Amino acid sequence: MNRLFLKLARVKNLFEWNHVTALLLSLTLLSTLSCSNQLGGLPDNETKGFITIAISTPPNNFDPRLTNDQASSRIFQLVYSSLMVLDDDLQVKPSLALDLKNPDPLTYIAHLKQGVYFHNNQELTSADVVFTFESIIDQNSISPRKGAYRALDSITALDRYTVQFKLAEPFGAFPMQLVMPIVPKEASRPLQSFPIGTGPYQFERYLVDDQVVLSSFENYYDGKALNNGLVLKVIPDDTMRGLELRKGTIDIVINDISPDIVSQLMKDGHLRVVTSPGTDYAYIGLNLRDPMLSEKQVRHALGYAINREAIVKHLRQGFASVSIGILPPYMWAFEPAVYRFKYDPDRSRQILDNAGYTDPDGEGPLPRFNLSLKISNNEFVRLQAAVIQEDLRRVGIGLDVRSYEFSTMYADLLKGSFQLVTMQWVGGSVADPDILRRIFHSDQSPPNGFNRGHYSNPKVDTLLNSASRAIDINSRKKLYGAAQREIAIDAPYISLWHKTNVAVTQSSISGLKLSPDAAFINLKDVTRVAALEETATN
Image 1: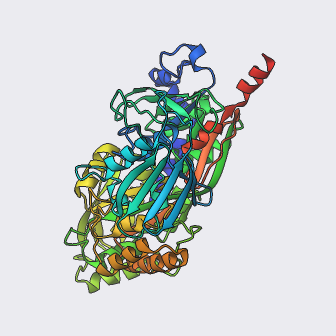
Image 2: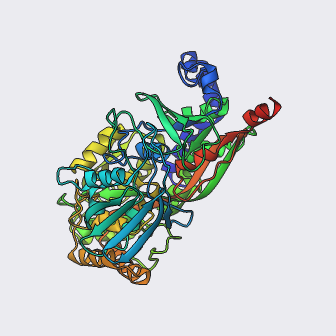
Image 3: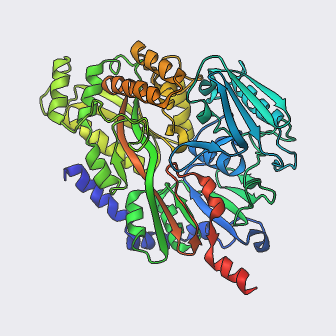
């Protein structure tokens, strides 16, 4: 273990509970975080049966057409419903739709379930579906989802419960694009601040940067939730999320707690840890408009310099696997035969020397050149950045790490104001290989798509265009595989790891299931055992 990991091991001691508890005893003012009334003002009889979930960041927006950040997307899963959803095999299946017909390569017809109601008691009809998708593809729309529908030519309500989608060209991934929350055509308040959907929970209130309160919707078409409601409590600090779990004021944390703290919590007999293979993908994004990062040799040198295995073993505590690309290994379109970076600092130094970036003082303190890395202020991300910084220092690259609130960093990312950035693709966003087009096609730069690093390769564009038009799954797999091989060689991303989903719950919590995308919709099946026993007694 190198000096940095020894240093991090000492930092890790801060997470030992006896140290943390002593610290908290000296900071008694923090006890307000564990107040008995978790809903901050609602009477106890209104909060009975509510489940409290800690999340690390607040939502940006409650309108699913306008944002796709993780916190907001989790709330979308709870408040809204989609025509189609992902099953545990990452295949699409009907939800609001009874079925999805594909009579010809350019036509999809969805028949809607009848008797589905929004939280304002208006029945869901084809008019709402048409409104949702038309508002996204409108030429004046600034939706980050717009690029997913570039093949969608028109949406037509054939009758009250039937919608026809016409494509401008064949698009094999189109059913996946119907995993999109449906919003009402008519709403009395802006959805950005007061969401109205057909999901299992209805919005009660949002205390900014503190908590989102949702109550179960009695008329949910797929059966009322097994609990009375949810409180999504914003706790930005990893250690505090762990402490609140240990004190019992938080019921569940899903994928929002550092592996170090999970390892400690596993020793607590009052808590339960649930794991499953995940889709979340961590990477370093590179801005290819930057003169230095536009050079493939420099990108390759970065790839060989970073010790991903050490990050997974020591920082992730084994709750991850080293990734070679954005698609998870168990996905049908995953291509294993791609160019891979192994940790090889000597090779990194040689590449830099050959590219003309010689070290001015050998193994001395002066760098070959300097780069800047933007990160969120998440504790794990900061520790990971420290490892990356040390790895690059060893090959002669100086790295200036700059930490920001997530919303600030994300705004800079959209503007292209970065050299390097660490980010994660989360949940269902990587469940269909068309995400490769959204990220790496040259015409998918913001606001059309997610090509924030402005990567451009005509061969990749051609492969992704052909893959998008292909209907046969074998043809799609072959074309997406070829695209993955080209992208891996170009290295517009430096892959880090795929997360193992980890949930920590109170032992009284029952029914939590972790899907590959760790979907929050599964919270509707969660109950508190003590509450069930009390009900049975009554």
